Length: 196
Image 1 (cartoon, rainbow, N blue to C red):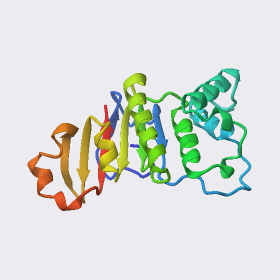
Image 2: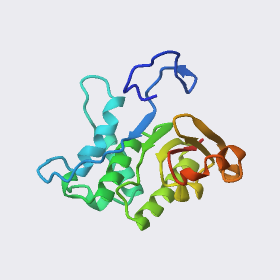
Image 3: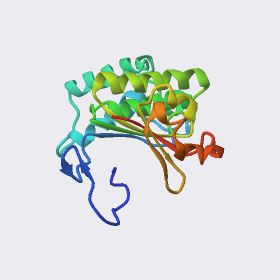
Image 4: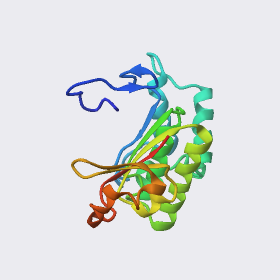
């Protein structure tokens, strides 16, 4: 969907257009490492998320600054605006990268293990934030996670994968579905959380 690897066959139809990759925000699994020598400040990292919407030459303007400031405030990290990304905690870095993924106001947000570096309190706040983004921004979200307990509280649909499709359907039917009972020994393994 992101175009990171070529398709082996078929096509991807997003928003009614085949192989359209604009309007997608992406938060990768691996956050920025704690390299304190990395010179980029938070606002610069977030602004990179707007470059895909620009024509050459890719220059940011005052309107872009407003978008960056707005998303930093929305994610409660505005106070970190001039901090170096490498000086932040893992959880703070993850919020910055989420801001980068969201700054262009995408229709689809793909998050890969976004809570792996977060402590339980921040993880809970993060999932509440994701739910709010889905409900208030009209943004579809695909979230890959092993944290079944947390995503059960805020998801509409779940897809459970273990080399094959085990379950796909409404969250409220997930725990009682026969196809899930057969694989109950997986516990909290390998699921994809989908908001649409």
